[in-house]
Length: 515
Image 1: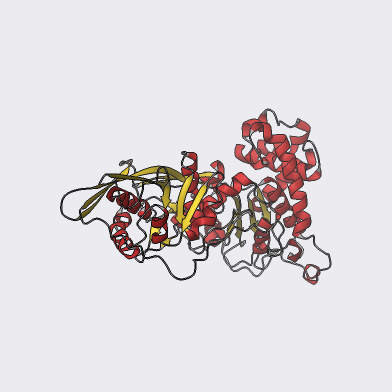
Image 2: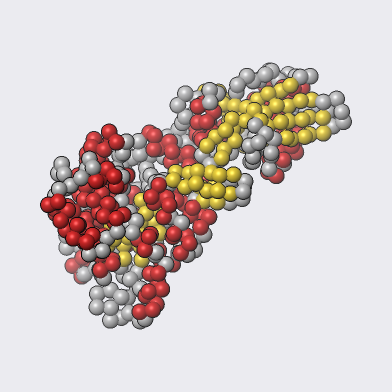
């Protein structure tokens, strides 16, 4: 009997770390020792592994088994190490041949089945980047693992099938006699403008708001909608993802990796090409929005909305701490979560859409004669939305009640497919202009770049400069108006924003505060 060695991957956030799994068979009484900072869930692997090996036909050695997870200083958690630990123990006992640099990623069932795990995509990406292109996963995880370029995937439904492939004696193996387990196959995502997405043609009236959503989609800007119940705030927000183009390969890989860690309902079989849409309830906690949980924190709604839309309906009903926690990712596009068990970093470059009633009762619209709220109640209601948060919102609109003509559908509205075509053209213009600075969207342009290479003439910014002199805008707000103006120029086919573009961008920002 010698030393067994296999490999697995430990995930800290989206960062994968290669883990070398060593196993040694001692000469003392039966025992199973697991070293290398395993957490409680990983310590439970010992009993799962023993039962799985017995039910596959090759029980573990009755002598002392010592398993070491290297590096020992890295905390390890979860059931994804089950298969790597078992294979190293069987190698040490001489029951299977050495597996070389193969990476094993699977949970084991007591009956010897290979069970799927979360986070297969980022784990396989880390393995391939580290020079370990061959991975073994459960059959249900095969399609997800194959999404990584350059990987060689081997998948099995049961432990007995895997052991046979790695040189185990076939006589004692308890191979399955039923039909093969169905393996999810890869599918392509539906194209942009798919009929299953809500359509802008359903929106009655609200022409100014429709224009604002088009601008937001084209430049990646944040939006706040304030209006009475029934004005169409939620409908507008739900239709924003349908205006966004499909995600390119590198963005789709990021989004799919985040959802691989979060996925609990189904196994991923394709790259997520459509921008995600997250709509958490207003009772959501900070951990559910930002990310958290015991041990190394899991991604929250903000990260699941990466490269998509995070919609907070009834925004003043959220806890203020939840709302203010969004300020950092709105600026940086990333979330770094520090916990006692470790630090996890997740991408969080989303478009934030806030929707709110004009007051607690929702009737303070138009003349507001039906409103029963006191001034103090209104101040408390909007007090949940701090000024630093509102200052980060590019487009701030006030919606009015729908008129009878709007409800009757007097005018035919443009469909999402038509608007999405203009959005794609505007984004193409942005990539061509900003590519040399490493940006893709106007919303990503730095304030320094707006002052230098993309500086506008005084004639174009005269109205904006006057607003700044009157202390109507902060420095951050000044830059955000300029970014929106560039997006409006791209939609209009202009090479550089003119005074009308800048003035319109400024007007879109001042509607809520002016009312």
